[in-house]
Image (cartoon, each protein chain N blue to C red):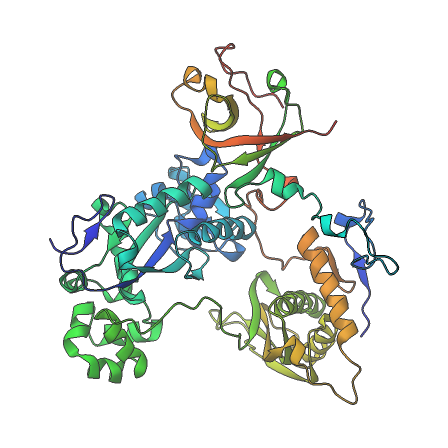
Length: 126
Length: 454
């Protein structure tokens, strides 16, 4: 009955550096003087995602984004709940394709644009 | 016309408001097709249809495809010509995407009422008080918010009972001036709405009763009401019929079910993409189904005492040898452990399998469920704690890394029986590797948009 479990190909390139058990370190000798100041650790989700129902991720490909400082492979965080404004970068639908457009250029760039969401973060791997 | 209030303009002093508590049924329009179009701008104005499991029948159509007269539920091979003629885009069901978008819609709905019952992947009931808000405003604000946040258009039907909310939802969709919002707010309005409503639009009348009513030549809801409460009790399943009568008269008999009741059974069954005779392949399928069913079992924090496995040949081909066996296995102690289910499944299959039959469907059902922490200890069987820890870890990894990242080593890799989803769109909201791609920037200085550079 003991069937072995093996690791599928999706995982073979990943290494886990996680502790073997959930650790809740408690000082056994003296109580930590910083105990009352302890906060929860930084959570990227809370920084990047303000509206979880309205946030989507897109990938930028190609070299068209140079002027905006966006390069091939960058990850875009799009929030549909944010108000589009001239000082924000927008994700738009244009001629059946996705495109990025600064809010200030929206009207100059044509009639057929539909604003889909606001780019709230560009995540770039150096 | 005194039928009720239609959106989007708010009601001017609703005359004779007769109820205080209302149910709103929020329904996503053409949900699957809308999800696909949300993340595929190239499809925006094109006709689009979505196919069921194994790419068999049409399960969702966008508005354009509806306009072309493509019926719901039709097998795809029957409409091949229309598809070619109108250049209809055909996609497989992308359940990963639909489930994620559904989660977003339901999350948004939570802001509009603290009492919500998720009824299906694209429908939810909300409970609202009449004095809390004017519903015209409320429903229009809800529509706008859902569209803005999730990109999905919804219709809202409001009525004093769930049954009438469903009726209102039908009116919201079928009356163009309603613009997707309909409020049944008075007895006269309800009467007018029911007067020519077909039975098929009534909630809670199952397939069997619909057939029965059709045989009795009853096609309109009004005819039912004319027969009266006693008749409905007698002919529509006793208390169910009686409840329906009261619900249609604005007396709520059914309330929201925020937490689903404990499940009686967990079933996993599918038709194969092509018929199978080979016992090895069948065994492999059963293993896969057991694996899925038992993951679901653990997800519901349950354990099973009994498992049954069944096989079906094609009933619609009476010329072929037929065989529809079912086998059951009882476990001494309720279990959650996939390898235990798989070992039992293999034995069942060996006793059921008959060579020379072409099977087209198999299924696994887990019965006699109890809470996973209610497993009665047994003298003769070691404690299931270690197994539960192992399965918990396996499930966690599979949730994190994708289905079947970890699976029993006895699984074959590729198999012809797997659900056919040939025209699957990217799982754009749940997989990092399948995100939608942007390749263009529109800037004022350039005048002309730059060509897409890959």
